[in-house]
Length: 111
Image (cartoon, rainbow, N blue to C red; front, side, top):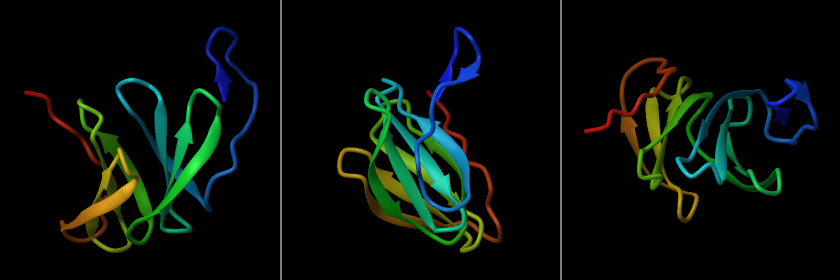
């Protein structure tokens, strides 16, 4: 955790192995952290600064993005050539999209 007023670290939150990417919901209540070494995404409750869930995704998840309405998180799995789709209401994977070798980033467009 970082205090943005003082730019100092105020605490840490334990997540999976090899955290790399993070995406925050539009209402700022949840953060989704990709853990490349454990093939998971840690879900952080930003009000309590605690990990509230772990979601298994593909191999070596790297990048993540959340849709503008906050209903889905997309996670690039570099080790499996897929993008996992997470339903943020249930924190479950609803599908995986094959995208080719080593995807690392995800971006969401808005209409």
